[in-house]
Length: 431
Image 1 (tube, rainbow, N blue to C red):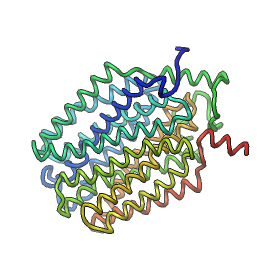
Image 2: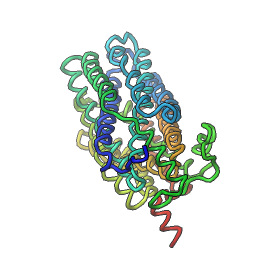
Image 3: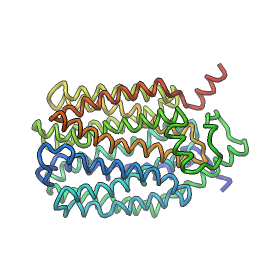
Image 4: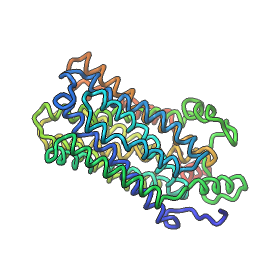
């Protein structure tokens, strides 16, 4: 495998297959984001005002997905990216059937556990595989394209399932959509996806032989060449201040997504919007987030990672607060767009920053552990949002809590973190 080439253009066919895969991953989670929370009370028996019960399925999703992200990175370094991707699609197969036949909310929580397994394995692998194929100076663009495709899928699914629920019924619409997506994804994985682990091994050999070209990343020095899982975990979590800043920001930004997933549909439904109307407003958030990442990821390849991350955290804080400061579909769509653009600025660039300073030998593990902390934010955020809303007695308190948390976390990235882009580091060091 010594003739392997790196870069998007050299690997365009396989890169495209991976983009299709992450679009299907986005469709899978998106089908749970409009109909299920809006109809939790009428269709699945959640008592009105039971904020903690309502958040239970997001809590389970966050903890399971976070754990599977952690596991997926290590598994992929031993068994390959393709196998782990396919295992993720196998985990998703029962979900549509569980929604169709769910007698109680506990079945939805159980289905969301499987969704967490699916998302932890599949989304991690699509991201890691594309980073294997591309060059260091393309990482921002690579992550931007990955997240663009995935969150475009989330937005499409939210809108389509809203209409399917109206035409076929909530359960039947989600069932039809879910079966079609998971079967197609599993088939495409088996037939067209290639394993990209050989590219990661080839990159590691180039670095070891001193043959790597282009700007040199500032890899952590307090870790062995072939580190244990615990070494990588502690490095990502607290031993390297740059990785700590990125991991905590990833965790906190998921408070926004947990809010949009559950509290947005409930708030808008309480204020008289139809399921299709809710789907469009949540879709605006997803579309702006997804489509803007094509630009914001590439932007960070030019101006660096830290500035877009901090700007994005603070813009998200403003967008969440705006939701409560006005009324009407146009206002809520504007607030959703502001929040979505903030997510577009921070989201791909957090992952790109991790990839900048993670050595090829343990990049899969580093990305998995970052994603562990990031998606643990779903669970922690959902618990905190549910608790805050319960204590305050109204759902709006969760919005204010999220806005404050995002502002503080962004300030921490500015204070503790540093620029990670290899070219910009080289410029700073030699200037």
